[in-house]
Image (cartoon, rainbow over all chains, first blue to last red; front, top):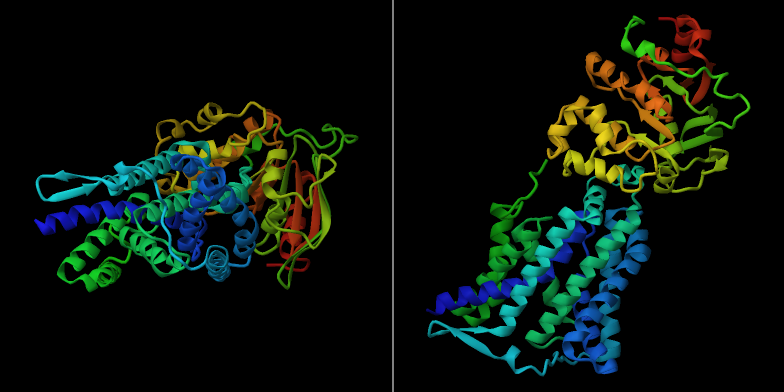
Length: 291
Length: 259
């Protein structure tokens, strides 16, 4: 029964990982930017939400849309300024610039908020409660809620990319930037929108992370970025639903590893990551054939 | 390929004189010099394209034709010189702004969006369309094969079909000036004739055409004005009827380049 429990909890955890990963996948798929500051941005999202609550005294739930708007704005501005400047100097430059951003963000957060860990209090007893599935499998409302949110975010992204005018333009720019510009599409604006979406989703993931436990400025680099990368690679680069599958595989592997020995939790995640990288480097759901 | 009995020969080109010698050219390029890194790709080239004409740039591989087109579309920045659209300087304008100002280009190699369906390709082309007679139903009528394959990915289509989609994608933006870069490259002569066969209808809608063509006889058939580049410099220009084949050949390969 413990194994079934691990698998179910692992699947729910995979929702959080997918939420971390989808923005990373989006930015890579569209702009070929590997955003090394992605994990730190999640932590920024968590601090922004706590900051919004502290300053405006709004209900917790209202801090989320405010955080999303702020993160999206930051994403758009950063893309149009720093990242775009790096992009025009080549793909390698974006690695260096986002790494620099990561260092700046982490140290900035430590400066302003100290290195102490904190968590996002929701004052909602429901979210800390759980219900039982069968007799021995407790399902927490919070992990379940995060999983549902992750699925909704992925559905919304999928719908936006495949159906909306801007989604179509994003795909066109990802395919052939020059050809899109010849059709009147402002590629830099489109990149800005993609970055805004990516930042909003990772901010949301950061809030989910902050509600699930403790967070501190160094978490972004030390764990979140790695989870996101592992989910993207396991699932398959550029595939949105692949990030969910990748997140679930990672989550289940970690919990099963912990079941064997609590110190194996992280190890099991990396082992599965390496196994996929060796046996199926294109990821489990290769959306595009590697041409 | 020197027969003039092809459908392409019957294009009712507006004579250059009748197009209004007094009117401003729709496109003017003044003393344009463009570098590719160290290489001087275009040297002091000037062109004047009058409304309603088919202006053909010819030249061998590496003569700078495509670079000139890309500079007009805004994908390259010139070292010196100006590009004017309707008398307004657009030299510093970004490519997407030029597109909305009325310059559409069918780039060399088609450059469709391979992960998008045919119809989505056209919709992207129409995203910032100007007002005009071309829209998606109109281009589907121009190339009827597109109607039933609208939901197909363009990556699976033949070169000729892709070229027709690329022309349609440029047309739905309702350009004033259509740049066609190497339409016939890599296509069977039958397909090339079919594609050039729609040129009269494009001209009838009031679109002016500036094209680059490696196939000189094809260019001579459709053009109302011929402009030859050799190693980035103008070697010949004027209405095609003015020149003998020998003159064009000399300009194309270089003076004294007798084969």
